[in-house]
Image (cartoon, rainbow, N blue to C red):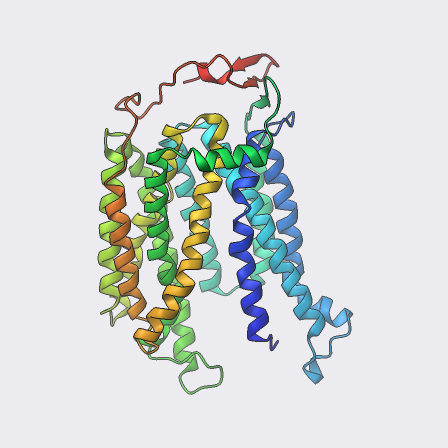
Amino acid sequence: MNVPTAILNLVWAVGPIAGLMQPFFGTLSDRCTFRWGRRRIFLVISTLILLAGFMLLAFHLQIGRGLGDDPSKKRFTGGIVVSIIAIMVLYFGQNLAMTPSRAMVLDLCDENEGNTMIALVLGFSSVISNLIIFAHIGNNFVFGSVLSALFVIPTLFCKEQRYVPTGPQVNPAKALFRACVKMPRQVRFAALAFFFSWCGYFPFNIYGSQLVGRNIFHGTPQRGSAHYSRFQQGVRITALGFAMMSLATTIFSFFSTELIKIRGGKRWTYFASQILAALCYFLLFFASTVPEVMIYFTLIGINMSVFNSVPFAITQLHVSKDELGAYAGILNVFVVLAQLFSLVSNALGLLIGKGNIAVLMLFSAAYALIGAVFTLFLKEPAQSTPSGDKVEAEEPTAPLLDDSDGHSINISKVV
């Protein structure tokens, strides 16, 4: 389908815009009084929305024909409209689930195990998705819908506690505004490090396949060109490279828990992973063979594991459990801001490099180094033990949670 570039750009811009809603969804989940847990309902609803989006996208051509599209005349208006609606639905469903799902894990685990578990699952799911692309089997969107349904099932059996507020409920918008204004200093440093980590990763993630297809396989992305098959081969190899990266993310997550439990381990593990990522991005600028690319892609997976866990672990140490959803959402907004920043930065890099994709890897290296600087300011609170366990002062006005027997317990007494 020949979709106008302006429409495509508008559709892709919806993603970052929708991402700005994550703090609000997180704040809503902080205060949700649903009887089966405050986070679970968001995950169930988002899964239903994702299933609808995947199905629309999987069969947009067939639906388009039912709306009057005529492939023989290259008329695909109905299919284009359906696919655009599907992408927007997917964006909404994804952003609805992202913050409550992370907050749910943090509710059930401490800041070390919970966040590394999330990084592990992110890596594992990315391995699966990239292998599906590499194998090129069936309809990827049908696979997506099946996986979405399967992965939400375990959350239905989690022993999530019910939130029972004491006193008048605070308006979610006011609560979110207060969280932004009173953001703890260490959370700000974690957010800035997180921001520059993503600024480094986005050019690599967006242009990695073009880097390999053009610079390694010397192909051209124009369909029908003499070297288009080379470019496609590079794209498939890139999918394998991202799968290797995600596998490294998954494997390293098993070991990172013990590293970040050490006093100061969060800061130095994050710092070392940023230096490693900066070195890999820099070397990708000079890469000329597939083995080199595979090595660098794999090592970047270590950084992926760390920067998707440590900023949230630091945040969890400095905010109350009753604000986890809000602050997890605020951190995720920095991903959105990094994505928007990358759009400008990538355009500037391509202009400076005269279209050479490899130049963007130098930009990624620079941003990773800036992120490394901000990691040096990260500190764990004095009340944290060397094992990373959080010791909170009791607050008599803390909200209550219902345990499985229906008895109310004060969350400030839960360590």
